[in-house]
Length: 210
Image 1 (cartoon, rainbow, N blue to C red):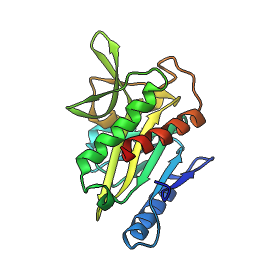
Image 2 (image 1 turned 90 degrees about the horizontal axis):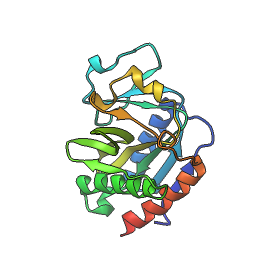
Image 3 (image 1 turned 45 degrees about the vertical axis):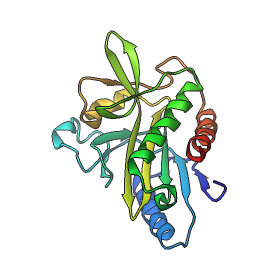
Image 4 (image 1 turned 135 degrees about the horizontal axis):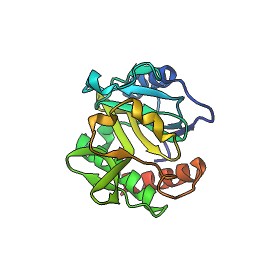
């Protein structure tokens, strides 16, 4: 695990710059010219479109910039107060098992939330991590969207720490209309980005080394 570069950005990262970096790093990892990388960052407000996106789910197309992410999934939102983590990992070293990789990413999120007394849960019929709010209501607290090229992963996860939740109303997040979106702050927990980052790194090392 010591060979993984952990990259942290203190300022908002333009989505185009993130895509360019990931594309170049994936190519370099594949050629053996660079090591694996995990990048923690925040984006300015924007929407991204996955390969399964339905244009009808882009409710307010002029609200924020919309980018073709090239990953799986549908529309999602990125913005301030949301921790985005991009995983550029060589899955050839990790069993070439995409299902297990996504399961492990979910587990990192679930264990991170548990550290702040939040019960994050999987759902078999929808990706991401969910929180039961009572009376059958469930809200999504973290999204997952990955892409793999020649068994090198990129894109990753987004955990809502304290984003402006009204920004999600410009899309139908991940095409799901019957459930909502929440955040760690909305769930009554006041934590900093740095606190979440430290836990994510610890849980990643535990889950992926285990």
